[in-house]
Image 1: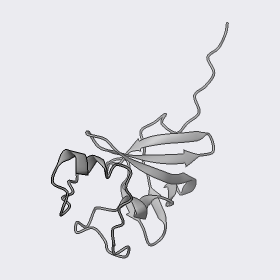
Image 2: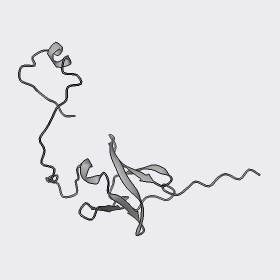
Image 3: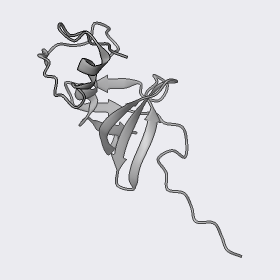
Image 4: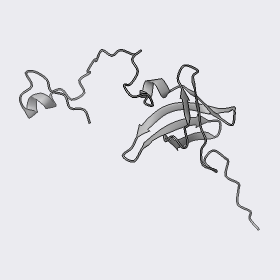
Length: 117
């Protein structure tokens, strides 16, 4: 969790007066993370998701959870959360604008309606 220290803010009352303040940060949007297999959320959001050479959706956000990150993928049948691990997401190609996934069975398939016999 990031921590911010501001010159001149020396007590809790001063800090609380900054709640809902807008913080502008200059960032180099062309910079890549220092690790080769790491990406910023802004690089992933909008990438097309491919499975078995077919486009099945688009990444709409990245959820950061304690166990692992999840890719929120918008598909024709709704949103699917996929663990962002190498076993399920073997290839990320930011330049090509796509990710290739190999999800576990049943995650992206429609559930069959139970028979009412």
